[in-house]
Amino acid sequence: MPSWLDRLMPWRRLRALGIMGMNERNADFIFRYNPRSRFPLVDDKRRTKELALAAGIAVPRLYAVVEIEHQIEGIHDLLAPFEDFAIKPAHGSGGEGILVVVGRSNGRYRLANGLLIDEDELGHHISNILNGMYSLGGLPDCALIEYRVRFDPLFQDVSYQGVPDIRTVVFRGVPVMAMIRLPTRVSDGKANLHQGAVGVGIDLADGRTYCGVWHENQVEYHPDTGGEVMGLEIPHWDDILALTARCHDLVGLGYLGVDIVLDEALGPLMLEMNARPGLSIQLANRAGLLPRLRRVEAMRAVPESVEERVALARSLAGVG
Image 1 (tube, rainbow, N blue to C red):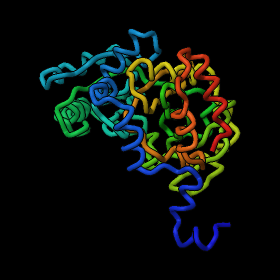
Image 2 (image 1 turned 180 degrees about the vertical axis):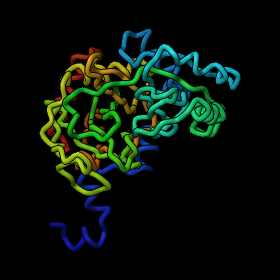
Image 3 (image 1 turned 120 degrees about the horizontal axis):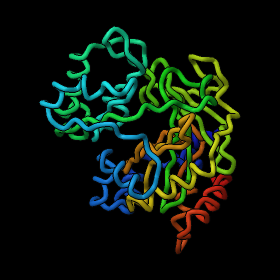
Image 4 (image 1 turned 30 degrees about the vertical axis):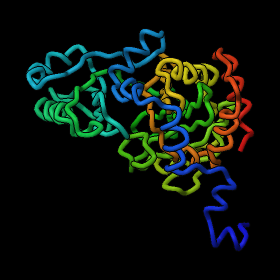
């Protein structure tokens, strides 16, 4: 139980738990370890995908890119070969602007939430993307049309409509904390915690989930499906840790968030990276990031090999 002093000054208790705040994240890690010249490599999802493909990192296949309004006139023909797909802004963030089409019905597109939209509505959404409605800073953007991920059956009972993803914070090339984000009805099938998704902490050592949070409340079961969110054993865990470690080498950012999805046929796919990953991963894990970050920061040299960095990540599971 917190002491009277901790109740009077709650930040003392947060500090004792190793919780990192926004200002500390920005000053001590983002500004210090992330060169601004490298930000475009992760802020532009098209560029990130090209880099990943060149490095042999698996990503969802890119079907097409819409860069100018004139291309929207032929969007129906462009999409004809694909029964389902995802549309997203190249410079989007927080899951904004992503449209997932799961099939067709009477010439209309069926969305993941069951709604049907016609060709004009689809074109209007793409036009909004091009005009920067969902992009960082509101700048003009382009729309990426890519493969729709079919999530691993493991998540059938703990996800509502959308695709769960695994967010890992990577520091100096070492994965230091991970969580899985489970879409809900409130989040409209999106995997972002600030929109209402469930965050579930993952034990770095063995890839098993151990606690969950929803709207800052502890949860053991998914609010919509009733499935138990604790005790899930994430498949391909070794590959996921190695993949996130390699992403650091790809873009040269010292403090990085990497999002991985598990496709039922293709396995782990890198979805995107973030140079300013949020701090809610601490809530999901009920642990602060600082002890693990300071442990890695204190190392004179971090191992170059991915295998050694993965082993180091596993050893951090008990830190904090």
